[in-house]
Image 1 (tube, one colour):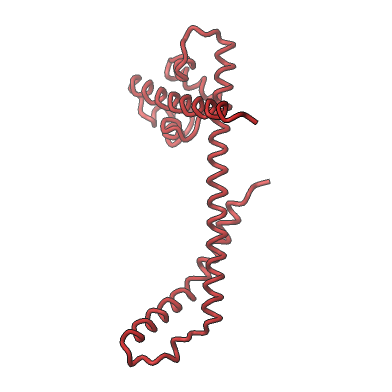
Image 2 (image 1 turned 60 degrees about the vertical axis):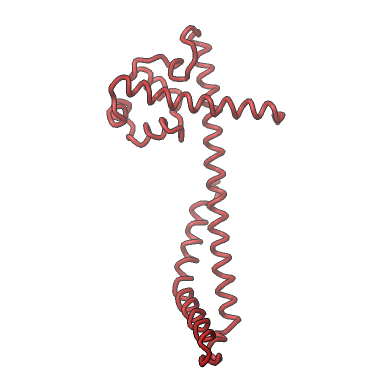
Length: 188
């Protein structure tokens, strides 16, 4: 495991390379007078892919990076913000290392998001069951209240309205929570 300072250096490297790559793709594309759609067509990808590259949400793999450099008529080293004087062997090695670091970062971010969503769906199911159980155990106590007092009448009406809406919505919420937790579970 890396020490704290080494981890910080890796984070800085990842963030810097990702930002530099995304900014360079966007800047060079615009300087060539290409829209995202036009670049996407030349690379045989969808426009959203180009948009994700430019916003730093994903990175092209090494083959696609070479294709981008050919379409934009720019060396890969320029896209990555390095000096052009490097030899091709060291350039490819540096590219692959940087892409590996960036892809690892994106995979970790995606996994964190998946785990968070999965947990939220499970919590949604648990809260739904808990509220349903409390309502069932309470057994509509507002039915025996004296509604001649206006404050009690308002409270009873609100309690009844909540129970009425919740009992009808709970199955939908519960099923949505189950479906969400199944769709966000870890794929083996």
